[in-house]
Length: 494
Image 1: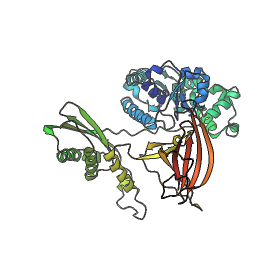
Image 2: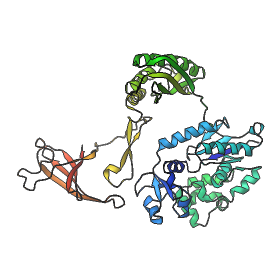
Image 3: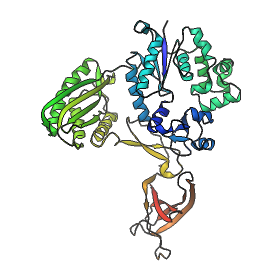
Image 4: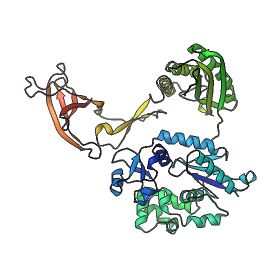
């Protein structure tokens, strides 16, 4: 009979936050989506849960329950990097691993046949837990007979579990607290109001009315818990990196000669990737310098490729931007490949469509020259002040455009960061308020004020926003900071 295991690094973002602040270990701690009082709690540790601070509530609400609550933001890139590192460690225990796309830190492993390599599945599970502990993660491993059964056991147990029969697994599921399953907060609270706190009580509800009374998610959970749903393991493909090292006879300072060294190593790497039906996704290299230090960098093409010239152009841009403390004495190149897609094997493409790959190639050159965080996009946030209502995040993949037909072009506010301080306003201005200089003329129309106040939790803010139109037709978005008694230009309407 097939065996499946679930590895749960419980609250992976929470563990990453506690790594950053080890002094918070004994305090109630929460990971929030934004570091503001209006931020939503996404994960909470045991001391926070004991004070009824649960995912889904506002950070300010959590502070009202416990003044000792500490919170922080963990970015998607940090979580993704931790998942990738963990995946590489787990590949030492099973070749078939599927990371969860919904809950970061949850992995399913194929445990079938491993009893021939290990004395028992208990020993195998203990080895996984110990290996992750050495990596700095607290994890639980549950070995069962179904995807949901192993997941629920790993989520609710403090120690490894190995079920000996499907009946034992099903009996354990009935006592699982639903608060441990990461349900939608609204569904969780609704079940609590009905007095349903365990999975067994939820399973006793009639299947026919689950969707109507609750939601599609509740119906899916009910179906999986009863064993009516089955999904095969979709393992992440294992790609072994290809590495090459070269030590120089003499310290090397010339950029052109370094590129020749890179070209030689790449020409030996790429045929090996091609023989494995892979394309190069990224090149990580390290330069060992004559003063004993080491410089590590990474470049990635817009799309996986085997083109040496494209890679060398990116490496040239990256090397030109570096400032090395001394000459290089050794070079290590680490190439990561991915499976070649069917589209990459097509000889001819439709040239009438916009060349999105050219855009990605341009982005790759910008990243290579200015760093991996040079290409960003604006993401909306739930902020109180205008400048806190968006943030810049790295753009790794340009989404497909989805234009909408509009009858009239909307007005757009261009926001200045930071706001531009305006000169003090003279009460006896003979020609009106020259807010944008003589060329734009005086202010002829004012709309406002719109008052924005708050910030008592950090620094009190009191602003009066206005829209003003100058004689030249420009609409400016300004505000008066009542605390600092100054006028600022927040943005412009275009």
